[in-house]
Amino acid sequence: MSEVTNKSSIVQVSVLVFHYTMDSPEAEYYEKFGEISGILMYKDFLEYWDDVETFPARPDDLVIATYPKSGTTWVSEIVYMIYTEGDVEKCKKDAIFNRVPYLECRKDEMLNGVRQLKEMNSPRIVKTHLPPELLPVSFWEKNCKMIYLCRNAKDVAVSYYYFFLMVTAYPDPGSFTDFVEKFMEGQVPYGSWYDHVKSWWEKRKNPQLLFIFYEDMKEDIRKEVIKLINFLDRKPSEKLVDKIINHTSFQEMKNNPSTNYTLLPEEVMNHKVSPFMRKGIAGDWKNHFTVSLNERFDVHYEQQMKESTLKFRTVI
Ligand SMILES: *[C@@H]1O[C@H](CO)[C@@H](O)[C@H](O)[C@H]1NC(C)=O
Ligand SMILES: *[C@@H]1O[C@H](CO)[C@@H](O)[C@H](O)[C@H]1NC(C)=O
Image (cartoon, rainbow, N blue to C red; front, side, top):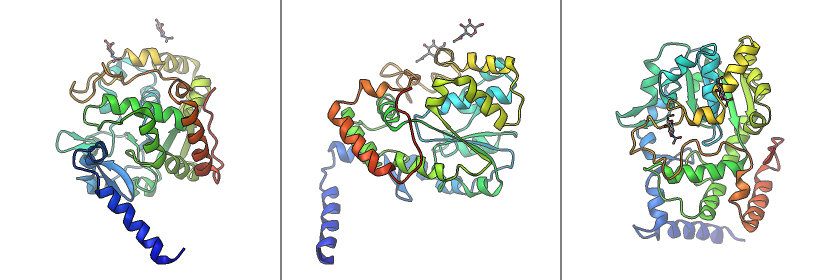
């Protein structure tokens, strides 16, 4: 193929993009998003990105990093329980999004993760969905501890789909199949799941990083809680572990207003469409993927992940 043909096909692709009429579902979908380093991101966040990039970390910060819909709130509550030595009352005092601020979250002056964190006493727990390349460099310079929790791609796609439906400001995800196509292409906020998990996996040898799996937590929560306690240099007493397991069970978290996101203003999330704490299981993708979608997904998955030693379980 000649270079000229190559170039003209690239031009054709961009022309196609601009051919969407203003009110087409595609145009509406992309209206909410911009890009940072080639990664799709909420426009509202990008408007103040300097604040994120220049964020000053403190050496005793703990970063909880995840791709969206991978168990972020679950592991955050576990870590908060560890920090408070199992003090359930302290955990219930405020909503999780105030106790563990979401670093890059921004909506003008209303929502501002950076400000929340700056005003917070140490030790801080920082939630982020950023890939390692976009994490403020000060976290690396200060050698902060980090936990990366990941979950198999199929269950993430299902959970992300319901999240799109229930978050009022998000665009219509279309049918589940349409959405999974976007997910595979990385055309969702935070970009490609495949790149996200692979980039963090590359960091796993850093002793300051603990890399854990949602499916392992579902299978043996005691083991993973003890792992977390040890990583945070606390003592995994049986009493503390029992308390944590009870308080952070799916049922407890679903009925706990400080973790089930019902303390957010009603216009942000519509829990009647789908609750924030939806099912909390591994393998729900089987109820959503058709045979043909699953086959297509598996082929694409294999291409994306074949170079990586990172292996997931889609059932337990
Ligand atoms: C947690 O403990 C409380 C009090 O002991 C109990 O009533 C509740 O059923 C437990 N929850 C779970 C999910 O184990
Ligand atoms: C959130 O917790 C409150 C308080 O327990 C409960 O009434 C409500 O049903 C829960 N909401 C959801 C959507 O899980």
